[in-house]
Amino acid sequence: MIKIRRVRLADLPIVLRIERASFGSEGYSAATFLAHAFRDRRGFLIAEDETHQVIGYVLARKGLPWLGPRRGGITSIAVAAPRRRQGIGRALVHAALAHLREHRTEQADLEVNVNNRAAQSLYASVGFKQAKLLPNYYGANRDGLRMVLDLTQPELASCNRGQEGG
Ligand SMILES: CC(C)(COP(=O)(O)OP(=O)(O)OC[C@H]1O[C@@H](n2cnc3c(N)ncnc32)[C@H](O)[C@@H]1OP(=O)(O)O)[C@@H](O)C(=O)NCCC(=O)NCCS
Image (cartoon, rainbow, N blue to C red; front, side):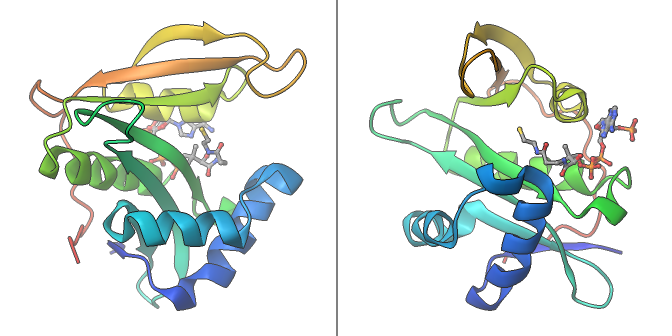
């Protein structure tokens, strides 16, 4: 059974390893992860397995001043390659959305590469809808897609994989 919990400083090396393996040189740096943890540690969630190995993370963003206090979203997510397609990504997204709902966020959004079908399917599976094409969002000829979710509507069924708030 996997567990989802708040990040700890000691998790960072493995989070960075998963990040590099998932996004290569475009992955977030330690400084970016630390800044996120400093801003909102409860929105930086870790999935760990039965042996307490870190196997994934998600970053939620809430109430950014330029978005308005009722808008938030998912900044990034990655699951260690050997542990994909086991429901861990979906459990992380549900935990991130629960965090946003706790802070009375009404709309969640995110950006995803148009070619990243796995991530788009994951987000669609929890109710996100495609909202806008973002030309060249990731660089020249690398378009993004904005997806949005109305958090005032009842949640789609969660897989309840031993999620923990703390
Ligand atoms: C995207 C990612 C986080 C998904 O994590 P995961 O743990 O494998 O996802 P889950 O097992 O919870 O899958 C949930 C649903 O997402 C969809 N999905 C996930 N991976 C998929 C794939 N490779 N192809 C098609 N659909 C996929 C399916 O609908 C799946 O439900 P199902 O297994 O019941 O069919 C993972 O592939 C990853 O870390 N990718 C690299 C980093 C990345 O691209 N992050 C997103 C940046 S926007």
